[in-house]
Length: 228
Ligand code: CTP
Ligand code: MG
Image 1 (cartoon, rainbow, N blue to C red):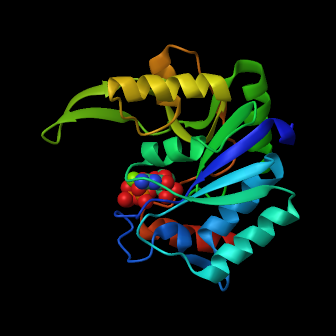
Image 2: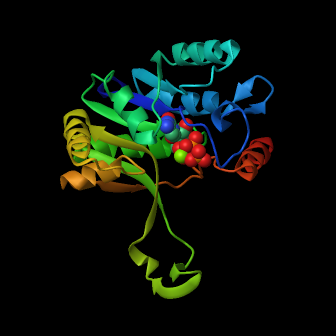
């Protein structure tokens, strides 16, 4: 299966909500071990190539880049570095130009915890359905509001929180990107582009924690979890 997949690993964001000079994915979890290295290690066993998207205006530490290269090598995965764009979607677009495999998966560099069993399940579903993503069911009650007052409660029975990786047949994803470009359609995840194409996307439940580092407390939580 590894040979059917190449991946785009997104690390080109600047982390505005995180609020540090250094983009969150390059922060250390431990000495000499950054968030992006953990994300890369999680996906490398599952793809023959990783296209790692880097920020346009931030030079990652050379030591981090060489450790990333080593880690990809250990898993027999080819690694190439590319500069991303100003939006997540434009980073995906640029990375996709380097993808040649039958299937592609896209992963947020800021989701270092993705578990091998969930990833395996996702990729198997992708071979079957051609478009799939990891997601978790919503546990909280969801309120729709106007000016901070509740308008209505949305039944959560059918609601899921989308995560990454999201994986697609390469030719279907190519059509989705082209259509989005033609329509000037901007989405916050990749599945949405395929939905826009009208192609059904399979939800695969993530049974392990796979939160995205967004705020500094997320990194604190990650560090605490890894110490347990
Ligand atoms: N990303 C990217 N290129 C961009 C924007 C985001 O590759 N132009 C990546 C981020 O590096 C991250 C993932 O997409 O791994 C998810 O994005 P998000 O969590 O929103 O990260 P940032 O955009 O960096 O954070 P913020 O929105 O707070 O600025
Ligand atoms: Mg963002």
